[in-house]
Length: 256
Image (cartoon, rainbow, N blue to C red; front, side):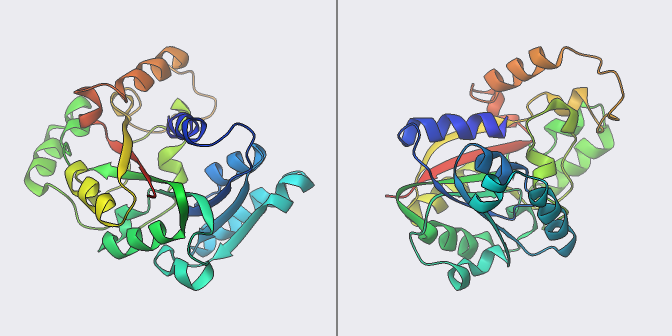
């Protein structure tokens, strides 16, 4: 879903065929970075986890030469983008699944906004702090739902790779690990304050977590029509009130 939503925003804001400069902060396994490089864009991935760096580099090494030439992997923390890059260096900045493990996200977000050229797109994927009990409730996890209602917005937790939470296929759907959650109203205000006001937002995994409470095995037969499930998720993720109770939120801000 995130890939479809991101492509929709790129098509709406940039001329067809333009080679974009993309920064993927917390690139994880490199799923989104490599997908965009295959689409012809120049991509820089920033990652500080050694295991994820190794996996991303191995995945890049298996790509054709043209894609390897368009992709660069940098070891570093998303909070230190100013150390590695000049302001305005990118047309698109991705930060998917990273805020979940950041104690104070505002400085990180301000740094990401500075990396954008005018008119550049900032794409965030975060845990939804407005409906933490909805996912456990859909799965019939009543104890989990009560705990979520008691806890509200959770504290930061360990990061193990953002791309696993935001892949497009139903086969990768699973409830995200515990971690910090964000409220839409708070992020909307933050994005306005850093000069990249919110232009569009989507819900991700409105129903999927109830259908796939755990990641299916690769050879397991799926109990639903995956194409139909994705069609429903795509529609619900852009429709009120459903998108407001999704497990994840995908927010797109544009640099003024």
